[in-house]
Image (cartoon, rainbow, N blue to C red; front, side, top):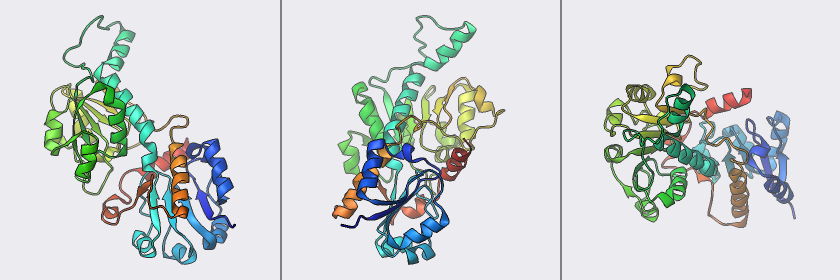
Length: 350
């Protein structure tokens, strides 16, 4: 029996970043894998493989009319950068019945874990007291009532309630927080299944002691949290930014933190790496993480497991998918939005 041909061009990512040894072995055993190694696939290798390829897996899939004209057997495109790129002709793919899938759901465990760590550190003043210790100003036995709080029964809000937020809810279940969320794309039955209340953005902001910004960037939500919106939040509320800086007016957030009115924990920034003299580096009320929410050994290998499962479903005639599927009604707002290209450029120089 002929194995389906799968082109894997992971660059700028690495194969062992995406696939565990077991998943990689299964991939090469079940499929005729073309390239499937670190570094960019050579042009001639890609060109020769396209006519037989049924799946293209790439960090930056370049799929235009010319490629589609040659890839006559193509069934699916899987991006492994983390966002739908604007390098794909989505309309042409839809017309051909070619699925376009995103690996974004595969980050949910590692990013949710970091989000919880940031929430606990920020809520309990762990970083603040750590730094105070270094200068001899720690607060022994102090409740730090103005700034610190417990997650048990806390008022928690989400801007965006996709897979990362849903995984965070699972991790926070033992704390029994009181949760509200704003997500105009979320189906009400999904919210009900997770036991959350969908409310307006304004209500999320006014009600949250701890706010997770976890929405996917779109053309419509750039600077969704501007100065006026941030001003609605309660004093000493903790803002945790774990999706994309695209959603927040970062200057306004920094100003709120500098004034002492809000606190923040941030993993993503408008410009990365952050300039050495950026004043944000000196903000005492902001926990800073250099875009590392998913950066842990094995933290992205859930992507490989999802790819294997979805390939099996694809070739087995099963319509279910674990990866994110490009939907015609949303792709115009999603494709090319965010900073995936910036992440790729940084990764190439690390």
